[in-house]
Length: 344
Image 1 (cartoon, helix red, strand yellow):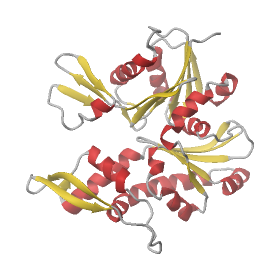
Image 2 (cartoon, rainbow, N blue to C red):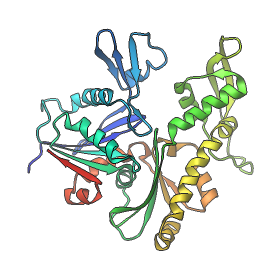
Image 3 (spheres, rainbow, N blue to C red):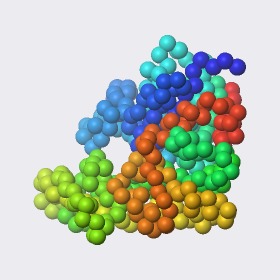
Image 4 (cartoon, one colour):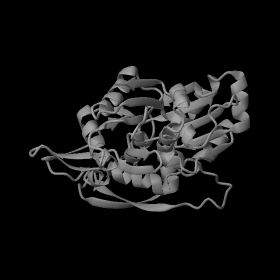
């Protein structure tokens, strides 16, 4: 059957990316939507909506409709996705002959997968494929997932950390943790509150994580410079605005416990792998993808704790989206990779 357009979607907790076959990634926006409750209309989606978080008046509701990698607000997710797809589908009107691949965390239930499918079904998609995010990320990173030699990937997103060992076109063993970028932000917020009596928001915590976040401190390495950044928030005691200069050492302390959960997930995945596959991983190492994979020196920490050679993917932020797009080039292979397919 001829299809007008093939679309890959990384419907992430933090960001939604849309990849169109032949064009690459055409949409990369935060998974946020702002709605005027009184007027019952959408005000903004993506970056414009994210800028409203923590600042909107009572009549404007700013929503992150995905939590921990799954849809928490079905209606808002559908509205957000519809707005983001509007430009992509310009000239096509209603979905007619369109094939869609959606990346979801490997640990989601069948009910949660169905909810994701339903969002796209409402738009009239002809075929819908559900692809586990670690598989999509591996394809997007250029890993040969059909080889008999096992490969390992850890995709650390906003809501979930998906760790998987892949061989022969399938996931041999996987661990999905609802502990990722958002939990790291919460750890930074808690640290600033406990240490400095400073109340900061999610956006400030995320900026601290990205700019000076640090997973591994090597006191013997004189080249590892300490970085600093101002954290702006409200003093809990006085109630007044306050600015505190924070160092990367402090961010290491704030993130240490949360990152340990991800390290444990990597260990557990290795422990559950068949011996022959585990031997492949020792030789081939681990690939890190997702925004969380870009935390400074996380690769060094994983190597220190597990002994594995760790590589950070060049396209870490877009790996899942690229993978959903690339998978559409070979539909017969995609049908093997996909955990479920819906036809209308």
